Amino acid sequence: MIRVKCDCGAAFNAKDDRSGTAFKCSECGTTLCVSRPELEVSPVPSADQLLAAATTSRFTSNIIWAAVAIAAVITLLLTSRALQEARDNKRRYLKEIAEDAQSAVAFQQRQSIRDSQRNRDGLAIQLSAAKLRRSKTNLDSAKKLLIGGKNEEARTLLEKAVNDAPESESGKEAAEILRTLR
Ligand SMILES: [Zn+2]
Image (cartoon, rainbow, N blue to C red; front, side, top):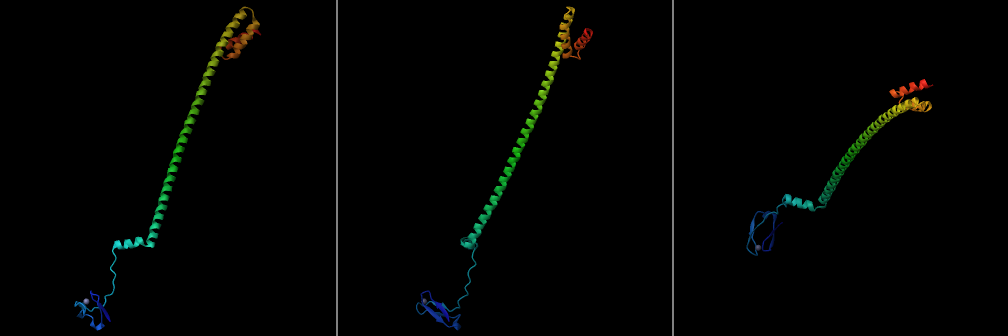
């Protein structure tokens, strides 16, 4: 049986072999065709419809959440890598500063060692100059004492003259005079 419905609301049953024929509605007179109901074919959904269906489905929302989670993890990894790089750079920078400071301190130490060495050398020179002067003065004083006959006092000054600068002219002369006194 083929069910035929009219727009006016009336419904008729027609035998299968009446398919392809026409008749008038007994209620309103509209011509009706007896035709087999077509196979229901759903229209192919549009891309927008698919997208709409996809975004509302739980499956897709899970996929979206998974994508968000993956993006978050990737962002985290990239961020932590960037932080690690920043830390490495900072460490390298601090190390460079420390090395610079170290070499500056070392340089200063060397400089101050050189300075103190120079000062020591200067002092030694000044000291030996003072000793040389004192040796000459003592030699002159001893000569005067010898002329005055004060040999013991002269001997003490001559010994000082030798001790202060044994290698100098005055030291050698004082030693020579001491030998004649013995
Ligand atoms: Zn009708």
